[in-house]
Structures are given as C-alpha cells and as structure tokens.
Length: 186
Length: 72
Image 1 (spheres, one colour):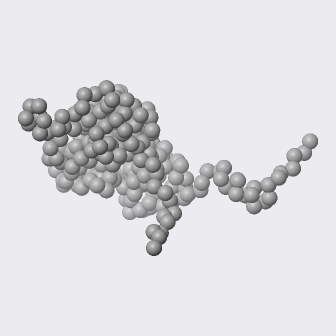
Image 2 (tube, rainbow over the protein chains, first blue to last red; image 1 turned 30 degrees about the vertical axis):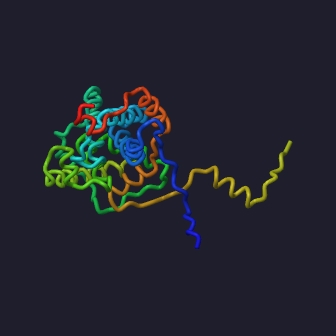
Image 3 (cartoon, rainbow over the protein chains, first blue to last red; image 1 turned 60 degrees about the vertical axis):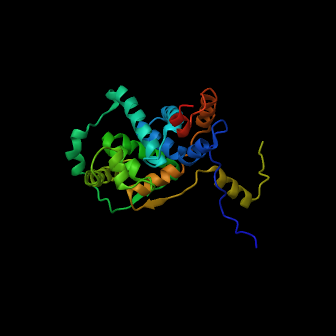
C-alpha cells in the first residue's frame, strides 16, 4: 500500500557539507531556532546572519568538549545569548527602554487571554519585531525562549540565571506588555 | 492601440490571486503562538550555511572527547 501523500512537501533544510555528520545534524536540527532567536533579539537580519554563523562556528570549536550536561538546544542557546548580549552591549545607546520600566508593563492595558489578530501573515515578522523592540531586553529574551516548545520553564530559568518562579512572574508581565504593543502595530 | 487579453476570465482570476499577497488572516490565542508562527516561516538564509561551510573548511577537525582525554 502506498503511503499517503502529504499536502506540503517539507522545506529543504540547511545542510553543512564540510562538517562531520554529527555536527551537520546538530546544525540541521537547531539552526532555524538559533537564527530566529538572533533575528528577533538583535532586530537586524544581516547581524542575525553574522551571529548565527559565529555561534555555530564557536559551537564547532567546542563540539569535541561537549559532554551533554545540558541539551544541545540549551547549549546552543547559551552561546547565542552570550554572543547577542555582547553585541547589544556594544550598541547600548540603542536600548531605548530599560528594565527599570517594569511598572509601565505591569499596568499595560491588555488582556493576555484576548486573541492576537493578524490580517496578513507576511506582515507578521515586522509587527513582532516592532513590538519586541519596545520591550525590555529581558522580557524579549524570555518570550523568545519560552515560545520554543523544546524549552521548559526550568531550562529557561537556568539559561537566564534566575528561579523558575521569577521566570513565570516576568513572563506574565512580558506577555501582557507584548500583547499591548502588538495590538498597537496593527 | 488596444491589446486584448488572451487569458480567459478564470485564468485572469487565477493569475491575480497568484500575484496578489495572500490574504491569511489568523487569530492567535497566545503570545507564544504568534512567535511560533513567525519562527516557522523564518528559514535560515542559505548564505549562512555557505559561509559556515567555508569557515569550517578552514578549521582544524574538532577532537572528540576521548582524543582530548587521551591527549591524542
């Protein structure tokens, strides 16, 4: 019996031809998540490309020493976060909102249980970027990490050096703030 | 001079649909869903993979943990 034909063919995935097979598989599995985090965290496609390249090159150099104390995803995210935070620190003047503005987000006029409407999927990225840019850096990072279904609250807490309860509390405020800002981008 | 369309009305409609941006209105129940949808439609640019291939070609082969352990 023939297998059912799926409606959509899977998208071609990036292939590293010059790396050992295990590292190529690592890249194939995680590169999209790493690029996405870099893109939305940095807000610049060209810099996100550079960052993704640099992160995987660092990972390649450390690959022999990776002992599996954390998942591959968590390990790669840690390298990415350190890399991107270093980059952002060098453009500190671009950071328009500081974490000291938490009170503003606490009282954001938005309900997290109301749907977020998107009329055109093609505009989605632009609207998300607009909203993320206005969030404190910490909120932006937490939202991007927790949106990854492979990441648990515990792993996000470990990556961001705080307790799981702190992550939950901040995510509650981050969701409200994002929803309010996202609605304004419509 | 007036040019007559050689396309049938149905073909014209199909072409218009193909050229116009897809109307894909959606509602998301949670912030995470919006971000996941965005991530799913954001592929890694091929240039990244090409550059990484070139960079790796110039790197020494990584040593495995047992090579490091035995100092080989």
